[in-house]
Every structure is written in C-alpha cells, then in structure tokens.
Image (tube, rainbow over all chains, first blue to last red; front, side, top):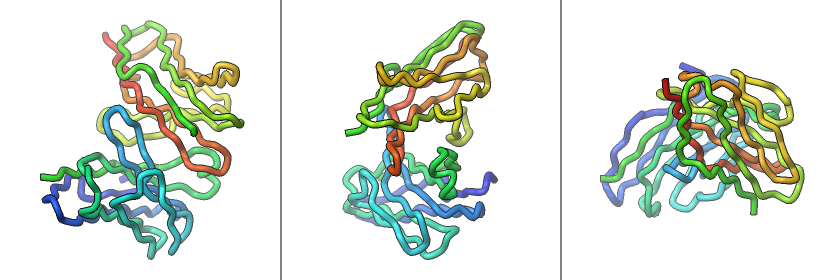
Amino acid sequence: DGGITQSPKYLFRKEGQNVTLSCEQNLNHDAMYWYRQDPGQGLRLIYYSQIVNDFQKGDIAEGYSVSREKKESFPLTVTSAQKNPTAFYLCASSTNEEKSSGGYTFGSGTRLTVV
Amino acid sequence: AQRVTQPEKLLSVFKGAPVELKCNYSYSGSPELFWYVQYSRQRLQLLLRHISRESIKGFTADLNKGETSFHLKKPFAQEEDSAMYYCALRPPGQNFVFGPGTRLSVLP
C-alpha cells in the first residue's frame, strides 16, 4: 500500500490523554515528516527527521513529541499539552535527493478526534 | 516570513473550460515552487515543480518572480481533475511552506 503506512486511520482520544500515531515506511527513505492538515490552513510542519536518532521541531511542535529509533518508523505522540489536537495528520518521507527535488511520499493520514 | 496564499478556497469550472488556480508567495530570495494534488480518497502527491518546466496531466505552471506568482493552468479541464490542489514554497535548504489549498470542481 504505497510504501508508507499510517495507522490507525481514525483515532478518538479523551481530553487529557496522550495518543501515539504510527508512521512506517519501507522505502528506505532517510527523511520523515509529520504535518497537520486543517481546513483552510494547508499543511503545517510539526516535526521532521533527516536521519535516525535525530529530529527537529517544525513550525507547530508544541504539544507533540516524536522519536526516530529506526529508519522505518517515525511515531508522533500527541500529548495532553496540545490545546487543539483534533485534526488530520499526515506523515511523509523522502530520500535526501528527493528532499531537494520535491518528491515527498505521503501516507494516507490519521484523523484524530478529541471527545 | 515566507508565506503562500491561494485566494480561492473553491473553484468550479465546466468540463472543457480553461482553469487557472492562483498561487502567490512571499519570499525575498529564489524559491523552489511546487504544486501538490490530492484526489478524492487518494494520497497527497506531487503534481509538478517549477524547476522542471514540465507539463503533467496537461497542467503547467510558470514562475513569475515579478508578480511572485506560480499559477497552475490547464487549457481544457476534465472531470478527473477535480481535487484539492496545494501550492508549496521551499526556500533553499529549508522545509516546505504550503498554501491553504484550492478545491477544484470540474462540472460535467
């Protein structure tokens, strides 16, 4: 299914709970990214990682955390500190060469709803 | 600060009509510009990039540095072009800045 898999597709969380979104790729891509997609706002970068065991904050990292222990995996944790977590979350990956040419591969997304 | 604007949230055209999706950006240097597309029930995917000067699925986009624009055009729209389109800017060595997106609806 496209080489990059996000799970689950839908996720419901109670207020005050942490929740982790999974992103796995078998494309041997070095770089991975997490975006948040809100209506009328486009995609906003949460965190990104260009190499295993290293990651950087994006534009809206507050209330989120990530890890990159394996090249294939880049899970995103939405913590209780995130004030407005209900959104559609997209994971993407690229080789370092594709990073410069624009060819990101995107996952199918996870829709998180806080209830 | 870098910014991408797409003034139309929704654009409806009839099949066979020309279509232009507008994109303007704010960046003082020489940017890389891209168009991404998301068809219904499909993943977001790269449509074209300005550096390649390519035509994909009949779409073209010309970078106009004077007007800081990168409008996406197609002379004859098809129903299968209906999708969400995102313009994106990438300053050299930095991450993407995406616009808010325009939903294109091609009517039969």
